[in-house]
Length: 93
Image 1 (cartoon, rainbow, N blue to C red):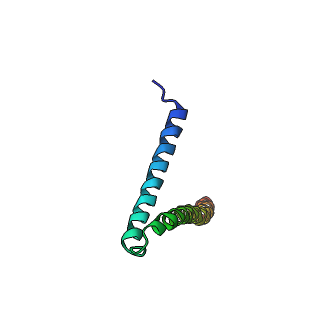
Image 2: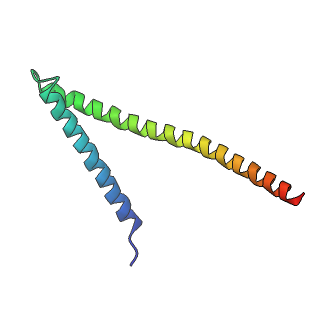
Image 3: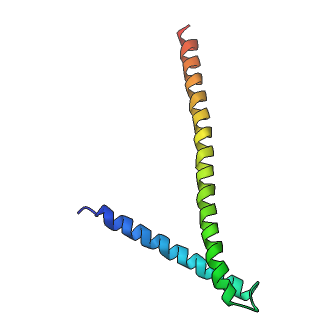
């Protein structure tokens, strides 16, 4: 029984939207209870903006870490090949 790829993508998107809405609601609540206690309606406006910026920052940081990991992995692979070639040469002679 094969699972339809479209269904999986749809469910993943729903999960992402649910998590994003939860983040927005959490940020709005925190802002209403702390910074904007005098004017809670401002928390809705700034909560959405903060949630968007937090999400974009998280994506950016993830991409930076992946990029840095690719460089480290490339160096490790290069060192591994060099060591392998040196070991083969030393065992031949």
